[in-house]
Amino acid sequence: MLRFEPKQSVSATPVGQIDETIRIRDRHQFEIKLHYPISRKKATATYDLESYIFVPRSLEIDRSNYSKARFYDDLQTHIRFKTPALSLTSIAESPDSPLFKLETSTLSLQQQSNEANVATFEYRLKLFCCILQSSLRDQIASIKDAKEADNHGRQVQLYLKATAEIIDAYRALRSNIAQPMIASRACAVYAYGDEYISLLVERNGYDLLEHIKQCNHPEMRTSKRRILDLISREVRYRKSQQYPSIASDKNDNELLIYRRNVLKKYMHKVLFLATRTRDEGKVIEHGLFGIAAGISMLFATIVLFLSQSIYGPLTLQVFLALVIGYMFKDRIKELLRVYFSKKVSGLLFDHRTRIYSSPHNPIGHCRESFDFVEEDKVPARIMKIRNRGPITEIANDWVSENVLRYRKRIKLSSRAITTAYRDIDTNGINDIMRLNVAEFTRRMGHPRKELFVAEKGDYRKVKAERVYHLNMILRYGGDDCECYKHFRIVLNRRKIKRIETVSVEGD
Image (tube, rainbow, N blue to C red; front, side):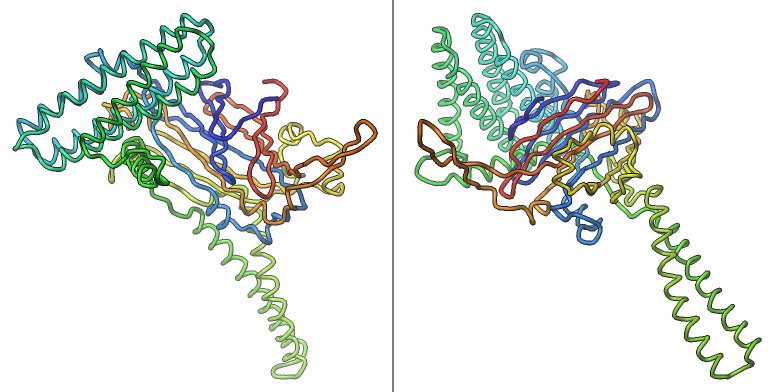
């Protein structure tokens, strides 16, 4: 059994090139990221996801107090391109790297600083910053995974060399931008990128220093000095450019955090796809409700005709029959509405989201739905994976758990994507889902408990924590593959403590 700690993520083994990561994002929110590949060989690709969340009855999360609207308020979804993977050396040296494409854009601005060239420059700068962030992170992960100390030190030196070359090459572009004919917006965009890159280098440098602190090797001391020199150089540079993103132990550094987050969102927006959402199945739903109203009206009309044929017109018996008929008419209509709603809920989706590369260029769509399902309606394979033990049955008073089901279907046009995004050499789409479980903690008991432990003829108090388990089973796949994953979310009233992945038979 694996355990995932906050701010860490683990990627599952790819199944037909589809893979997922799950992590704790904050106290009450966890994130699932699914990667869907884009195949150049197929015109379209369809991917399905079903998520079943088994909730203890004691938390009282059911149809009566947890509506569809509340679930969609708690759920955040984003669809974005997977960041293209490039090594730091490739960014610094390859003639096709985003850094060299950015240089080409600055030369185009010198020739003609029009709106189109400024937009292209801004687009390429954002993409360069996103790729650089991903490359820095991946390179540090590779350093952390290095087994031998010599290889470890060599990788650190390569990291520092490539990073310095990229920084210097980017800042050499300032002379291309600082021209009177260049639009002021392009100059501002360059400055935003400059500050963001400096912050990236500093932050990743400290991440590397935290790792080096755990290494007992003489060569690491040299690496530590060089990393600190790089960080100090970046801090001095931001001061010289009068960027206000300077950390200090004399204040709460809220400005630094604010600017860093704003710059990150600004840069990463280039990878996010535009979406438009509308309700789905409303025409069918209203049609079925109309049928329910018609059936109830038919019943009332039959009662009217029968009473008049038996008792004659305008008699007390006819009046009473009409009252009773209309009473049952309303009940029949409501019962049929509930019946039809249950029957179609598993067939129709709640929302349909169109995915766009530009305001008038759709590249796919996403359909999603949420409902509660009875355990006897849950697929047998899902129930087998759930595999409740005796202690779970006792916790639920031998009554079934409440089961939430979230479904999603994504259809993408590979041809439209590759045509619209020629500059992005990406191999897929990331579907990011973040679920806030604060509502689930509302009826949880106090997390702190005290226990007593006997030792050496005496006893003492020890602290204990009360936790609850949410079991989530995912079934996802594409046109020719299917995969099951089982996660156990361990939480209490204060926070999500950890997420455990439970082995699934057949994986």
